[in-house]
Amino acid sequence: MDLSAVTAALESKSYEKIADICDNLMLQVAADGAAFHNDWPYAIHLLSHFYVHDINSARFLWKTIPSSIKESNPEVNAVWKIGQQLWLRNYGGVHEAIRGFEWSQGLQDFVAAFSELYTKEVFQLLVSAYSTITVEDVALFLGMSEEDASSCKCATARLDCGLCLSDAYCEEATCCDRAETRPP
Image 1 (cartoon, rainbow, N blue to C red):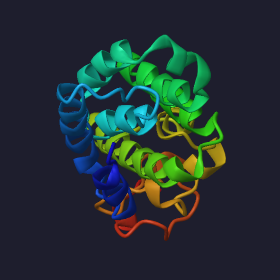
Image 2 (tube, rainbow, N blue to C red):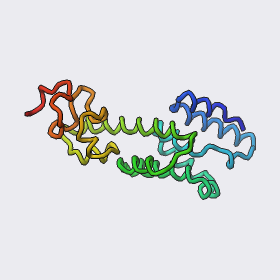
Image 3 (spheres, helix red, strand yellow):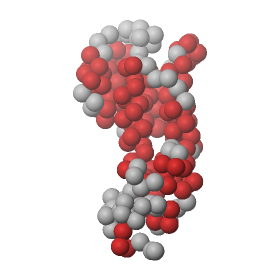
Image 4 (cartoon, one colour):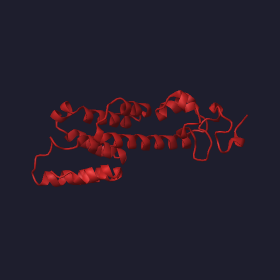
């Protein structure tokens, strides 16, 4: 089985392409009648569906994974834990699942890229949903410590316009580009 397209996409950090590559390759290999289950990169395939926001395809893929693989490959289960938290919309749980496993060398960059993408998307959700939010909630949603969330020094704790997520908790008067719009 030739997984060079998957490897090339991982190396070039073209993570958004991996789900389609894996889906097409799996169909091709299955159509050829080749046994592939033991060699298939299930963890990468599952994570690639999460990366492109296709949780349903990941759920169906999970159902097709042989139980012997689920029982013998802890990394597949660790990726699935991320998916379970995504399904439940447990924002903090997603970050816990990501941090709660020692990822293999081949998956570390992909997991880090997913984590960064997920954090940015949740941040945009917070920006659009809240005008004021507690430090505790920011920390939970973005998977960071309360100390990092309360400090505007952390790049993820700032809005694109330069305002902090919660001006009331900003400790530095000069950390925001539009500090003059903040209340005293």
